[in-house]
Image (cartoon, rainbow, N blue to C red; front, top):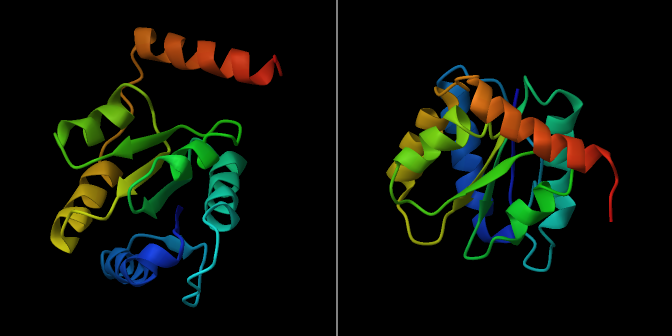
Length: 153
């Protein structure tokens, strides 16, 4: 399942992405907002989407949209088993590497300075990429997870 969330800044784009994914027969769940509210707060939408990924981190993925900061990815990464990767539109190989090497399960898209067609093609690229499961990458991910699960300060 693909979950998608944003705040008010990309409300209309989020709706277009949901429609686009459905047109490609990709199972997607809209995680809010459902109406425009200029005063909403992204953690209210991003964290529930990340929690859905946490429920089945090897099966579920999420796409989160934001304007110019990284706080959405930081918010998502507060949820266990979530690996949110930020993509700023250059180079596109970063999208592949976020999955191939890091097994990212959330794609955080910088949406302010890129056109809709590039966003849609980037999402399709990300969704069509699988983790390569090489020992060195798995070892690194496991070290991060071990620290995360130790509840260290």
